[in-house]
Length: 221
Image (tube, rainbow, N blue to C red):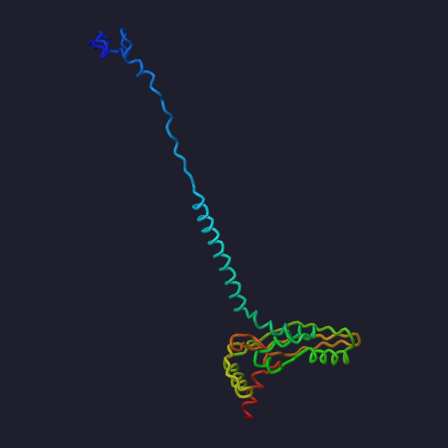
């Protein structure tokens, strides 16, 4: 079957696209081929910042959780009870009134009212016995937890003797090996010290305040 050119009416073969007479249809053969538009994914600065903040927030949360766990473990393992003993000997070794009084619970420290002159007297007293260049060191040999009933007796003792309303939630009997060494003499002794958690903070009420001492005091009142 023949077909005819839409432009000039000339007869064309069925398989012809361009008219042999007038050339109509040639422009259809030169259609422009457009390259497909590539889709590109762009990430805005704000999106990146949000992702970074989210990442840093997660890291910060992990770090905070680790710190909390460490602090909790230190508390559970009784790390806080060592600090008063450390302050006690460090204060003596440096003849520093502030450090020394930090070893004691607040109401005891307030009553002590130590100053530089008091620590100077302590230094002179030790030098008289041990010689110049006195050095003090200590080592904790053992500790024993004080039970709840005995803590209650210590609480009663404090309230009776010092007229202080306190809450005592922990306590240790600590065996301490201490050495005092001067130019002329050196001495090492192992003694028991008692530390208590009073109103949430560890401290010394009296170095030798054992539950037994508290009981005897209350018994004789």
